[in-house]
Image (cartoon, rainbow, N blue to C red; front, side):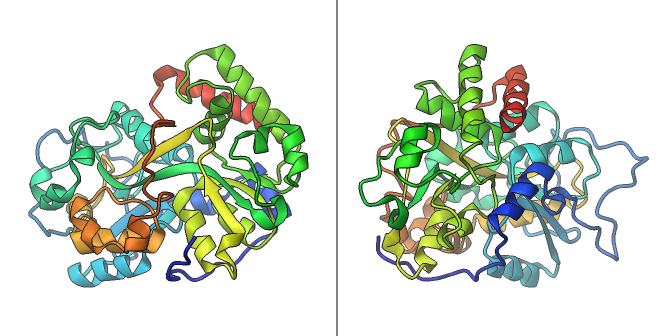
Length: 393
């Protein structure tokens, strides 16, 4: 792979042992609500009821702000320069907190009075949160840059067909990254590297593997390995997947959704389950980018879309709409993809995206036949959550 221009600075690493402990005990920093700005509360007082779903337009003007932006996002998922540019252009602060899974974020929002304005839920979680009344209907008149979206992302997405509650932010795939210095160049592209004991031993992955701390992604990987849909609602199939994950826990270092890419790049692990763009950034910063590879296993995997959405009781809904419109600007959308190496849903951004990124099949896969969106399985979602907790032990 051709090395791409470095765009990030490293962050402090922790040991695998510490990560294992964090995976068992949870990370308070990734799920804590954003602190209220000193001059203005981040949320309405607790004794006031949450607003009803906003079915009428918000009345926000294009470019209007009504306070600082409180952003609840995945870690390392936005160029800091974009946050600075938004703050400078609109005269507001951007307060960002992070989470490591949709399941960690959703209950905080559903509880109400979180203080957040904009969140970045994945596809299936959007439909769950619409059903739960957690998201504000968008005032599309305040987001004229919606016109920049590719037709594929402008409407017809299964989780929000009319785009009434969410706007695509970035998309990509979930797969496996391998340190070829450990495994060798002939490593097979299969989920068996995780779930087959013999393969894990053969390629040196025992005790050197991380899996995402995410029930739908990790159980979905096991389901694909078994030949099932990652959206199954068959309890027997889910039980088989749960058993595979439970058996794999004896061979993995941690369930980790934040620093899995850095652990691989620093030699603390040799096989990592995670998201395409995160790995590409790490490969680019490595002394020898060709030492690593990323692939979606031959059994198939996840294609996901992360989305911007406004929280139903957002304290600053106009600032939230303005931020979404800002990200959908052609230049800003390109800057986002050029920084984090995830594919853009913004057609207007494509002429401004680094050609090496735009032409990279890892970022923009041409064959998507084996990829599935994670879908909301309704009442069956609790089965995934319970199975994952049981599998981790």
